[in-house]
Length: 114
Length: 115
Image 1 (cartoon, chains in turn blue, cyan):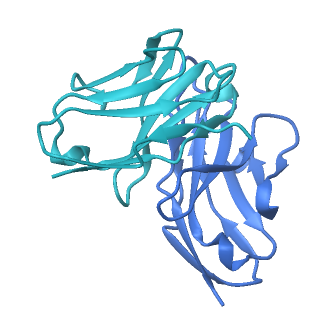
Image 2 (image 1 turned 90 degrees about the vertical axis):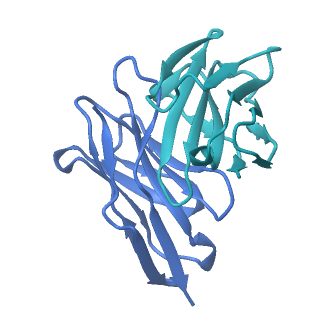
């Protein structure tokens, strides 16, 4: 069965600092990986996705993520965080044969200090 | 940009009542989904729907839940007899060619409160 672990429940960074949110997945074949962001009371917005090819993927709002098969990781990064990035971030995996659902991690809540 | 729209944005209902949550998926999409998120918890898959039938469902999606695409544009989730533990944000989503190989786009959610 596929699963996603986001080890950090809550992260606080200063505005302008770099950010890395961790995501580890468990899946038997090539996964399809996603990062979604959820602002308070809002829906899920897709930040970026990895299906195949270049393991470093670029997303919206200056985010990027790197797929590392050897570490079963898909960490999200941003070089300089803005106050508007404060939100909850969810990593998700899909790709199980015959499955069409995504499995989400528990999320990481990002706070940005001025 | 096309988007998934959901109504209502918030509904309060009494325990035991029936609730219908409505969604308009992106127009050329073929796969439709419902997910839910209990406050403070992770997003959980409920059901996927393709070609007018359920293609997959989770253990959460028991007999009190049903889905329907009544008119070719709407996609609904019905909860027959709501329980307190059904209080959650319900997300509708849709995708193009299908499933995990394509991007799933989510709506803004319908917040259901059962009292």
